[in-house]
Structure formats: structure tokens, C-alpha cells
Length: 118
Picture (cartoon, rainbow, N blue to C red):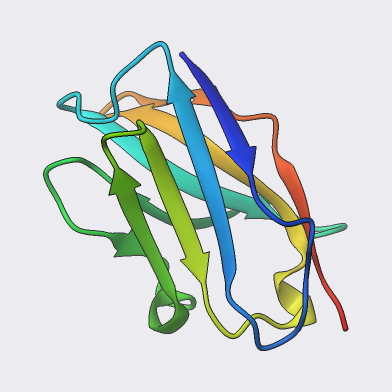
């Protein structure tokens, strides 16, 4: 399985960040697969953003829930992160990650740098 993030590298404050993760070598509709977004701000640790499976709605970090959604495009085998009203504190490397229920994460994308700046 391979995961590849794509999206803008630079976003202005108050705009919406949209990132796409394209999955190859496996179907995003497979039971027990969990599709996750994680980010790492500069100089800080990993921060879990949220996850989605094909059979459930989003589960989003409480601190981001009011402005975050995760969706799927099954026709393209992609899952998408939308983060609204971004601020410079959202600057980070964003990773899409595949997990398996009760087994943890097994595949990571290479990560994409997103900078929020005017």
C-alpha cells in the first residue's frame, strides 16, 4: 500500500486548507482499514487530527472538531482533509496514514509541508 498527500504548500490565514491522500495498492473501502490524518508542527511532536473508515463517520480531535472534516472519494480511492479558518498555528507537516482496527498504523505517506502565512 502506498499513500501520497497532495495539496497547497501555502495557505493564507482564515482560508480553508484542503489536502488529498491518494491510496494505491489497497481499497479505502476495505473493512477494518482506518484512514487517518496526523500532523507535526515545527519543533513539536505528532498531533492526531482525525480518522475515518468506510463504514463510519469522522472521528476528529476535540480541539479541531469545530473546523475539521474528513471525507472519502471512493471513485478515486482518496480521502480528504478539510481544515477551515486556518491560522499560523496550523503550520505543520501533514501525514496521511493507514491503520488496521486493533493493530495500529502500518503505512504512512511521505508527508506534505503546509505553511499558513499572509
